[in-house]
Image (cartoon, rainbow, N blue to C red):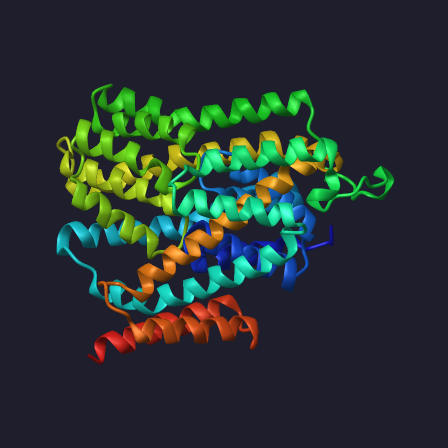
Length: 421
């Protein structure tokens, strides 16, 4: 691992927090481009190893990947800064947009900004698909696994966790008998990279669990003491704490569960508002799972319990965000040291090679879905969106523009195009 100053890393994580558009695929693409290709802060092998662990966890894999890499570079403080910087800008932006939504009913300027941004995100994800595919699909079998994941996800609608599990088991089974089919060789253990220095022992594990659980439940206890068990704030905190344990596959995987409970059972918002919230989360920086903050905001806004609606909404949104993201830090700080120690394990490497191939297939599917959404917004081909996507891809691939510059130019072009009509 190269020596990277903590201040330099902090500046990067804060910048990433304001430009990490595009959902998990776009965010993973940005980090891979910046940290592996351009800055060379982390090797390809370590990046993919960390990514494979994060996609197996509940919660937003891109944010957890940032925590993992921050931890690799600078220990616990690095993981905390990376994880917090990844989501804090989106917390503030989405709170403001939620307030605009409930008071004004629409956000035309935001729609204009992201009219240009969506094609750029298509280019970002496409470039990531090509780059990761070239490096991860080292054999015909891995290409077949990626193709099967694409078909399973795009055509058959197989849930993402099922695809990852099947790919991991396939890689493990093949690796035991024919590792060459996965492009693997039995390496000399002495040639492997040294594990990260942040060794995990049982005392550390107890401390991580204790501190993490206390931080997780402390706001819930305070809300129960203040408002009682039947309060909308307590119900939101408990519900989204449960959701944080089962959100395998990201925001889309948990949308049905959220809709059934938040819309059908509690009546915090209606189905149309739920989809509007997803749209806002898709077009702002940060993980797509930030849609939970929108749900928490509207649930408390509609049921303020004697508080000013704006104050209730902010409180509901912040509590929801807290119980959604605190577990992410627990999963990484608890498991990452063990995952690093197992990095030279041949059987684990084989299993994770299968997982990586499946992830590439799913990224390709999401790139295609994003392209359809951007290029055919109302069932009609949009030449502007196609031209923007092509120019953004060329800017990234050939001209090597920085990601923030591509995003900024695309967003401003979208505003100009929309308001010129």
